[in-house]
Image (cartoon, rainbow, N blue to C red; front, side, top):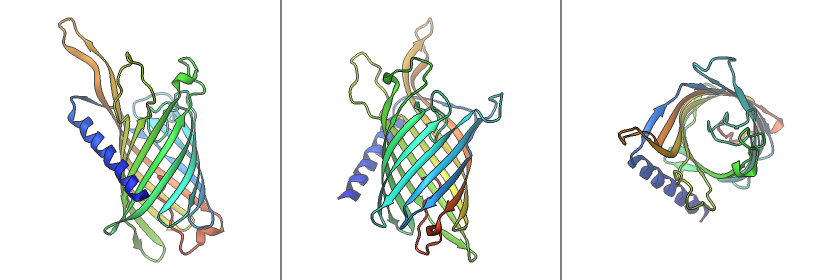
Length: 277
């Protein structure tokens, strides 16, 4: 039943994305973003873990310091079977808007959340589905610092990977994943501009390199999309010049470094997650 539920949610997101792509819209590509991250994962009994991660944000042609900001990520996840797990997360951003996290431009610099994960097989590939609900809190917003800027949102990530052994200890894990985020709109004023159904998307490809049970690194590339719907602006002849449906694409590259701590990291049957938890 739970597997069918996540599959239904996934199908709904894919249908919504197809509808979004079919509609008339403009696409703008921004400069490349570099987003490295260092993680410390404390291995607990079973596949459970506690995660502490810190990333940094740098954008080409930005000027000024090399890194503009970053984000601290905290997490805990408990597996009640080999396929199912749940967990809690907290992201704390360094900037006022909170836009330096795994979704660039997403408001909120204090973001608690909860997740539900299912892992299985699709042929010879590992297939994961991660459904999460979060509440993004803007604690130091220069535009007013009030609760109206806070937003609840839902996230769905689908991933495919396969592990290959290279020698006695080294393992490679090629992986591709797509994640979509949508704001949860509980009520909208009649005169309020209608937003896109899917607000953010992230297509990511990576190769995890596990050198030992305690250390691995993952180089990755991604294409992030911010789906925007704004008021259309017209020139003096009545032709649209800006606004409307716009897809803001951001090419992103990164390198995740992970150290796994605790005696349970050496358990023979432990199945580590990708660094994109």
